[in-house]
Length: 149
Image 1: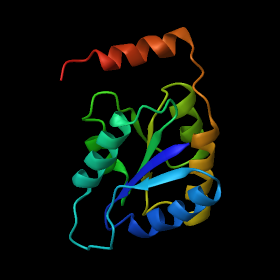
Image 2: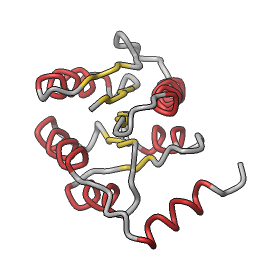
Image 3: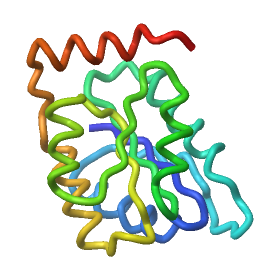
């Protein structure tokens, strides 16, 4: 699976670890930044880079993972892009529901709340959970896609 990652200074260390974990698992990882730890960087640019790259990707199963201190900022920024369904996830239940029910294509992680093993578990579960495809779930996603911008 192709995975686009992005992180600000708060998520930089966790992103670096996840890149190695994901590559070891056989995923194609595209790092959308930041390339080096920059204490004054801002999350919107990395969310935008990853979201645009994901939307331009024609792979059926490409996904994105964004990391900042709370995960909230990345989630807000990514969801500004039509076709992105970013979910803020901090535990297994949220990881499962965001994929099963909402077909989340971007995972937003709170670096301040998750240690590496917890983040790895959330990522693995999120990547492994398929979209259930129930009619009501498809209908709701279509409604999201039809909201005015």
